[in-house]
Length: 241
Image (cartoon, rainbow, N blue to C red):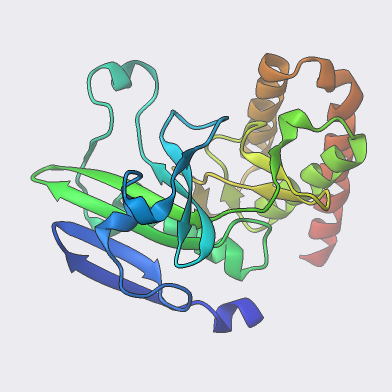
């Protein structure tokens, strides 16, 4: 409830840019928020995860993460950072902002979404998003404590309990802070709705594949702890229904 009272969404259009932002914490929106070369941002590239399109920045005194939307795979060879326009609210930035805000308001351990921007050019657009930075956080891939992995499983089950499907659940999109708390990030192309058992399992399978690719030695030591945490939280969720 406290989170609901402290978040107000506003819109801004100007300088060829459309911005969605949380006016409870930010004011005077400007496209400069989303340009890593803007002097006031103090942008520093994020070392891991992403597609070389994320920076640690400071917005209105708040530590934040700026991410530009870029394509991956074969499509990136042809079109790097433009997408087909299907309406403002269907843009990847605004859709992710909305999904993350729902999770944040529900008390989920996700970064607070601060602002999202879209630049339209005819039938295409570019986009970027700003989210609050989790202090002293490291990727799950850098954590070797089974108890922390168990906590990550609890957090993922909580996300699924809310009907949210993560499009890219991997060991870089689960963060661990200095207090060993797990956080989920990067909800681009995520969806909210009733999840099937198959969809939930697919999310966990994707995460396991990333473990085997990035940190294979951790599978034997930590994966069972994550699954245990997930299963226990999910069983509690079923009883709550």
